[in-house]
Image 1 (cartoon, rainbow, N blue to C red):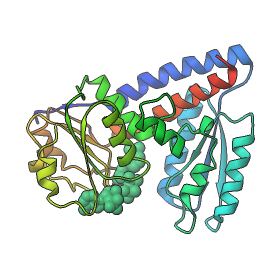
Image 2: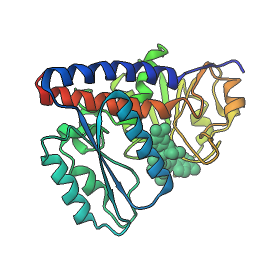
Image 3: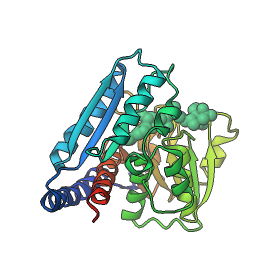
Length: 281
Ligand code: NAP
């Protein structure tokens, strides 16, 4: 292996340490504790694990959790009403709706019920527009974590050829817009893309966000490229064939321990930002 690892665990721990200090300051100054509401719909086992991890990490940094668990048969109207109530609740700083919701629910309508001032997971259209125009606002948590990793490892984005494989509203699409806002030359790839291998081979910076184990072949990677694997598939597998890719790349994220921990760190950092706004500091 020639690539150096981009260590998401270490960087996330650093960010969470700063968040914990910030939470202590807010509690001291205001007497109230920052609060993140998590909304989970249905029985998807992975979603339950992800929410539990977010609640545990919140506790570790002193952020209070308000957990709303709704049954599988919840309607769009019921979910929107729950989220609107949290949006109005002045004791809640941030709202996280765990993705994906059951397929009969209009997820976009549910996301848009989140008050943009509490959109600490960066899923509303308002947050997307702010990311696209490089304005201050809440970042989509996983792409925000990717950008912080790239910055921590001093990856020069201006003028770099960046290829994002995947265009989901929570990952590929905002990741590409954030790279564009940082002056990368961005190509989006998706399920209808032809000649994927050739496009990937041109990437100085590759973001894999597909959700298929080892879908990106090591031999496609440009020598010296920076490879960020956001995929997380059964058996702790990423979207990139790790060993051959790390023999060609300059920097690469491990799975697990790369992008995953950064997502939670950004979520909680942004919850602290929302709480500071409530505190007027
Ligand atoms: P998603 O909503 O299923 O989106 C997958 C994307 O991949 C879509 O844009 C799809 O294209 C594209 N795609 C599918 N097949 C393709 C192909 N053959 N060639 C090129 N592109 C193809 O998934 P997601 O929610 O973005 O998640 C992607 C991965 O990231 C998953 O492994 C997930 O577990 C992981 N993830 C990790 C974190 C984290 O914190 N680490 C957070 C979120 C997600 P179309 O748009 O054309 O369908």
